[in-house]
Amino acid sequence: MIVFDNVAKHYPGGYVALDAISLRIAPGELVVLSGHSGAGKSTLLKLIPAIERPTSGTVRINGQDVSHLPRRAIPYLRRNIGMVLQDSHLLFDRPVYDNIMLPLIINGHPPGDAGKRVAAALELVGLHGRGKEFPAGLSGGEQQRVAIARAFVNRPSILIADEPTAHLDPAYAADIAELFKSFNGAGVTVLVVTHDVSLFRRWTPRRIALSHGRLMEE
Amino acid sequence: MRNWLYLHARAFAQALKRLGAQPLGTLLSALVMGIALALPAGGYILLDNIAVLARGVSGTPEISLFLDDEAPPAQIDAIRRNLQSEPSLSSFRFVPRDEALRQLENNGLGDVLGGLTANPLPDAFIVTLRGDDPDLFETLSARMRNWPGVAHVQLDSAWVARLSALLELGRTVVLVLAVLLGLALVIVTFNTIRLQILTQKSEIEVSRLLGATDHFIRLPFYWFGNLQGVLGGLIALGAVWAGVEVLAAPVAKVAETYGAAITLTGPGWSESLATVAFAAVLGWLGAAISVRRHLAQT
Image (tube, rainbow over all chains, first blue to last red; front, side, top):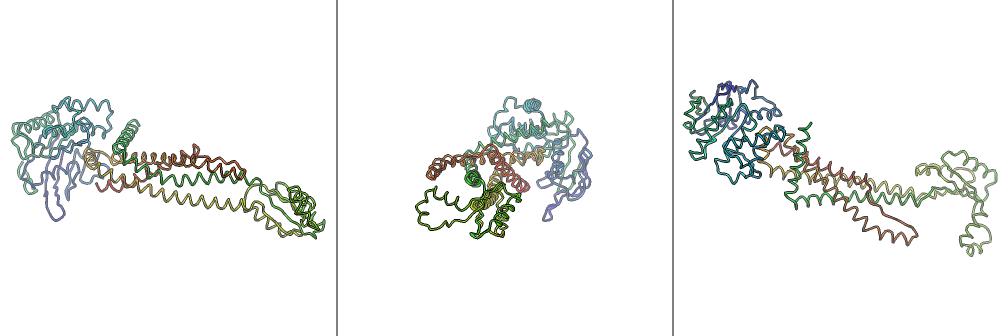
């Protein structure tokens, strides 16, 4: 369960990114978050893994108040949240396999089991047998698939994605949307920020829109 | 426990990989550290060799008590009794003035002494001391000077005390040098790790997003500093050994001209291990300070 209770986020200089946001996302929900540029979508997303902290109000993830979580506890929160950001954040100096393996190493998985999970994740995102390739040799869509595999390989209960299809061809974008739906089908709570709501429309997800930092419709 | 070992093994492998990725930079940093460490390490070995040499040459410390020409037998007996009751003495013997003259004649000074009308030498006690404490020798000889019938007290091992003081001074200089150069070594590691953190910035950011703890992120840098220190320590040892090898023959030749046999010895196992361990600890320390300071800024 993700709960935002009267959350506001102000940046230095007086810019209000979010204002009085109250929101509940139940476990296993597929939620699509839309809004114009600067509406506060990315900020809202970043409050979930405590990349940002609210100025006021509380954010609770599975009952835990993450708004005031001590710094040392944040890594353990993030291990249960898969993240796909606008920039794929892949490490270009190592192969795809190692990129996907990283969260498992961080989480202390035994190497044998971790190897099987990476192979399964590669299969899931349609990159079977390409683990030895380097990200620079992949297309934008393939890089985004690697980022998704990395976000999911730890089997998190929550998956958040910020414009995962932003720079992709329509065909690639539809594939990526399909992937998110499949994760949601496996019981994962999925929250996707996107400009292109139509990609997800056929699964009738819950839609949320933000405008100037305020929740406009639900 | 297995996870802890796995994390350390992985961090160690990562550190090795990073060292290997920049062989020239690694070599240069290790050389700087090695040369910096070789100075105090070499100084320590040199002092150690001099101390061994001094112990061999000085033998047992002695004090010579030269008596007044006019000292009556009763005074000489009193001095003898004083010496017998002195616990810090190993032994003593009385050398009458005639015997002293005979010894000089036997030493090849017969021609010189033949020109004298009378024996100029005084009676004397040669006192052998227990232990090798220069302060005790000084105190004892000061006390003996006040004994009636004693004209002059000569501390035969005074130069040993001076040498001992000089060695002590040398050790202090080496210690100060080790501290200063150790500090320089910490700074070198600090800077190397700072550059490493800059080049690994994206990996650090991604790892944090994926739930890496600070400990997980820091560990490879700690190992990097540690390995760099070990390399520096090994280079320092190599430099000291090379110095010993180069100097051994000339030193032996100089000693031979004085009729002495001197063999320079390099660092032993314990000194070698201490040098490498010292360098490793300094490397780790430099890395720890740098990581704490710079990771907070990334």
